Image (cartoon, rainbow, N blue to C red; front, side, top):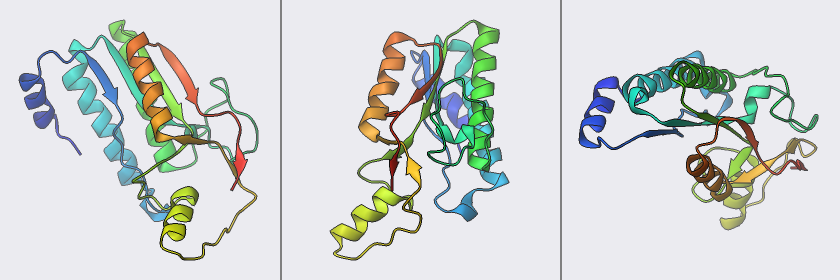
Length: 187
């Protein structure tokens, strides 16, 4: 967790920073990692970024998640207008981070782009989720087990998430955007 003092040193050594691209979060690797402490740490990190870099920002890009909707995966098509009802501490932390960023942007008249990413996958993923688990098992020659094969997920490759983030920076986008394929697939 970055402390405000550490961030202030970054501002001093990088005075030309004018955009906040907030991609950092503590993400639970297991269900037991999803805790109130994770919620508090993620909110505190967002507050520190806004306090230190916010006064000079000309725009904020905030990486969020479709977990803010709290819907069982694949139950219905979601959009930016789907009601937000996070069920996990992680989902709640991302939603409250959105509120902090949007409120800051509104009070300082700067654009805020909230990117609600679908389930990310790609090389280097260490979280125990379907696609990384399948790949690790296959590469090591092991069998893999599918426990809830009927569950549906909208998967987004990390390179596509990076492109969406870059586009939000380039366009100085303002608003909430669901970033995914819009086509959930069964595991």
